[in-house]
Length: 250
Length: 221
Ligand code: HEM
Ligand code: FES
Image 1 (tube, rainbow over the protein chains, first blue to last red):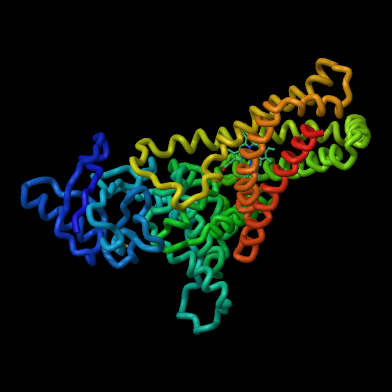
Image 2: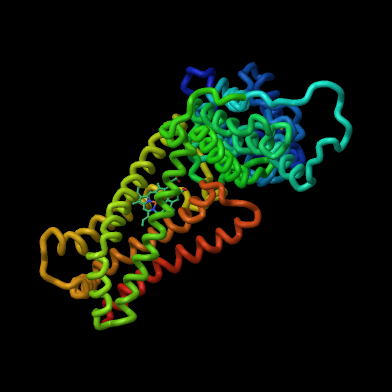
């Protein structure tokens, strides 16, 4: 199959950037989207042109490194997949595909389609440390966690930090990411001692880094490759309420 | 970990989530107000002579609780609108380069994306509404009963058109607002999501439909 690509090219953080059009032909429909970009890059290299920069690592949907805004959606049109797990069979022959980097002030473009997502790490750091018991390895089942709670914490912990939620949100809000991190620790005994301040501290960092305010459009949960639910945001809001209540009245 | 710095009410409300709490609190208050308003209006249908309606309006005007609530309502609106604008100003600064292709309709409801627009149109309608039903009697001291004023106003098909349009937009606003407020308060969970969605639909269709039906009833009579 053949596709026409409109790709955002930008030299570095401070340059302006523009779209360039490329055609890629002879694509096997079973290759992945990134492999299709590899084909293009090989051609560019062969012609002594600058290859297109994009992030990727595991290429199996678990690391969170990849992330392209494809035809107006974070990670493209398919639900529950990362860009690396998107395959060309999802597109039609002669499709025109627009590829843009995650666009958010908090995610500056480093080059072409590669953005700097350090801001997400800073939100995690804002949560502070997690107290754990040191000493010997505890016996299995010495800390009992009901299965439902463990599952729920796991559903939040599957966040790979790709930033799709921020990219797709009309307000470039990091609420879903932050809420997933708040949730996984709020649900488990390991995160309990710092729980009272965690949501508040993480929200402070999130606000300070220039992410927008959540307006509950729920686009994030639709484009999240791990399908993390916005109910996490409700939990973060609850944690926040508790947190300010505790802080104001103690 | 100890709290890193001293918390104050100002800080708590100032954070993104805090501002949303104000939005949701004032929004929920307005939802309740709207329902009470509709119950009042329904007297126009229950007793077409207008006596019950006039008596109700009289009762409201002399009830000190209601006079206090009028101020609360005014401030509810003011905080709701100012907060909406403050939230929006930040949200406009977070993406300096816009997307060329942005398929928002694929992952969110348009009601949720047009809250400021629907809100501001409701606000302009509100100004007209207050002029017609409050200012005329209270500021310009027109000597007319509320019922006669309503009957006169609803004789004009253009006004009925504006009225219905405003309520369609309000319906969009309420449809998202209802659900959103509960989410903001953290009162959303697996169990409650379907109930909330249904309640939001019922409220946001029935309440505006009620107001509209009454206006058409007045026009026909
Ligand atoms: C009878 C009138 C109104 C009612 C019942 C109402 C109700 C609500 C409710 C319940 C919410 C949800 C709060 C949340 O997201 O947590 C909301 C949000 C909102 N309202 Fe209103 N509202 C009314 C009038 C207005 C007006 C006049 C404006 C004018 C600016 C406005 C602007 C907004 C905006 C922009 C939001 C969304 C905030 C966000 O998503 O962050 N509303 N409204
Ligand atoms: S490259 Fe690791 S998730 Fe896509």
